[in-house]
Image 1 (tube, rainbow, N blue to C red):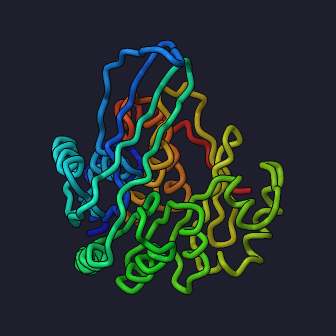
Image 2 (tube, rainbow, N blue to C red; image 1 turned 90 degrees about the horizontal axis):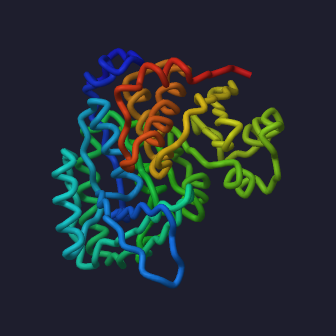
Length: 328
C-alpha cells in the first residue's frame, strides 16, 4: 500500500499506508487553561477532553496526514467506554482489547506560560487480558505497513513486553517505531530484534550510555552509539536536544534538524506528533531529509495548536519549508 511520498500537505493527505498504533496505557487527557493558577484556593475552569495517551496522539496526527490508521491497545471500565466515544468523534479507527480495570485520567494544567501535568498510573492488567491483546496484535500486524509503539506500560505487564511486540513486527516485515523510556526501552535495546527507530532525548541517551554529552558533542555521541552493541541494527536513533534542535543517526550519517522559532501554544503531544510524521514518511519510503523534515514539521505544527495531538495544517508549507536539515 506504500506510495511515492511528497512533502507538501496535499500529497501527504493522500497517503494510503496502513499504520498500526499501539497504546497500552491510554488516558482521557483533560486540559485546564488558566490565566493564573491560585494555590490552595478555588480555580474555575472549562475542561477540554481528548482521547489521549501517546499512541492516540500519534493516531490523530496520522489521520490528518491521510494514512489508514488502526489504533489498538487496552481499554477498560466507564472511562474506557468514554474513551471509545472520544476516538469515534475524532475519526480514529480503533480495535482495542477490553480489560476489567478502569482507563486512567491525566490532567494538564496550562497556566502562566507553564504546563503542570498530573498523570494517573493506570489499571492493572491480567495475564488473560494480555494474552487476548497479543492475539489481536498478531492479526493486525500482518496488515500493517508500519507500526508505532508509544508510552508507558500499565501495571501487570513486564518491562520486556514491548521487545516482544517489536519482534513480532520484525517477523511480519513491518517497520516499527518505539517511543518509550526506562526499563521498557532498556529491554528493547537488549533484545535481538531491534526497532526501526527510537527517539530518546539527550538526558535519556546519556543515562543509557552512562555519559554526559552536550549538544556540542554530537560526534562523540555518534561514536558512543556506534560502539554500543545495543544500538546495532537500529536504523534511526533520533535524539531531541531542546533549543539545539534534534540530531538523527542513520546508517552512519549524522543529521541535525532545526525548526523555525514559532511560539508554542501547547507543546503537549509534540513528541508524539513527531513520531507520527516519521511513521508517515518511513511507511511511504521517503528519503532521509524528507523523513526528518516531516517529523519535525508535525512536532512544530502540534505545538502551534491548542489541541493535543493535532496539527495546524494550513501552515504546513510554511513550516515544512523552514525546517533546516543538515548532514554533519
